[in-house]
Image (cartoon, rainbow, N blue to C red; front, side, top):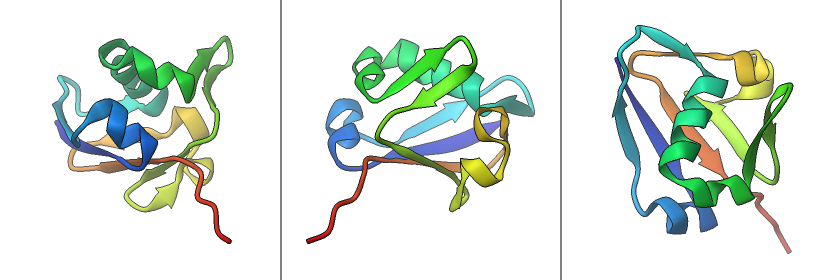
Length: 94
């Protein structure tokens, strides 16, 4: 299964580019995907942490195909082939 992960703002400075991952299974949980990303990019742990209860998102929003994960099961949301994951820092207006 192939998924695309896009980072924005300060997160893009850490990762440098979008990720295109080929995963072995047909679907995976968001928490497992986040763990894999944090192993590859440990500096992201300043923004995303894995706690005992799962993913603790600090200061970022995670979208799957344009929908916020809080409407899709939180860190237990299923990621499927072809999904696009957007990870955004907080947006501020003035």
